[in-house]
Length: 118
Image (cartoon, rainbow, N blue to C red; front, side, top):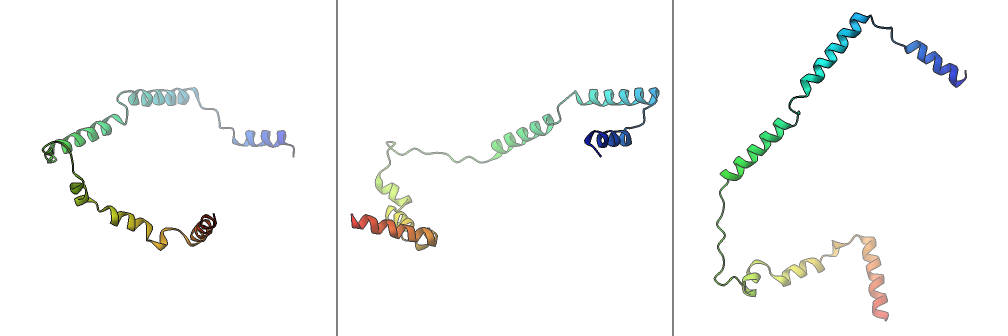
């Protein structure tokens, strides 16, 4: 069967029966009424507005901590070290053997050997 004949056979089999003019007019009126009903407020407007109101209420109700400035506005290195120990931080990054997968560890050893030969 050629493509054109197959297309015509499918078209003739699946062609809907024509509607009566009264039924077609009723379906068109129903469709127009449904379209008009949806033209008012967009569907996302109410949920977006409700979310914004809830976020504003949470923001206003949440307790805020007061930010107290230091005496002259500068921070000393001792104050910074109280928060982070730089030696511990660098040790955590460099001492872990599992930091790289095994195949990359082998490549890193090869690169280190090449750098040592120079």
